[in-house]
Image 1 (cartoon, helix red, strand yellow):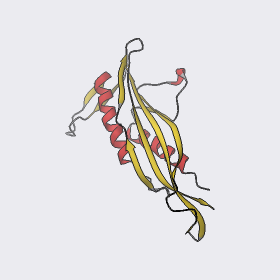
Image 2: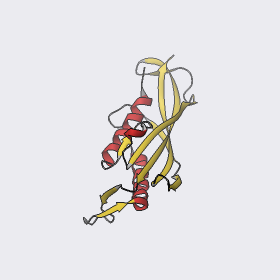
Image 3: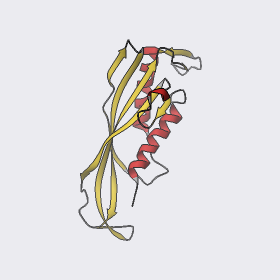
Image 4: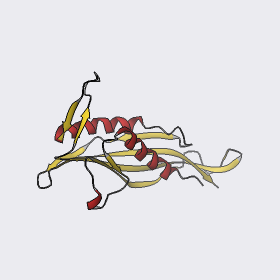
Length: 164
């Protein structure tokens, strides 16, 4: 039996950790005392069968299987606090600038979007058929906590084959 849900979730988290080494990436909401800013929180909030795309019986890999499209969806939250700062190269010229607060949030939103849309699964057998990036929303500042944040949604559909 395949484990594509965990494979996709792990690939997403690992790629965010690779691309955003200055951020703490959580695979679920952390305990309050464990939060470290700036951070990215990946929250799977849905998964399920989308459609039986190839009928109920087909021969695949020498065995009879059911073919279907399965989907899953994630909220990806990014948060920075007043003390968060990273060195970024804004124009690719090699000179760096310190990004903090709202400027850091803007930088993170654009680059997280790039990572989500460029994500591939070369080391797995997952065949992603579609992905939908909903754009960042709820871009906000919470003055009492001095935290800037934003949320986006990513849905991924993939081919799933299972025994008849």
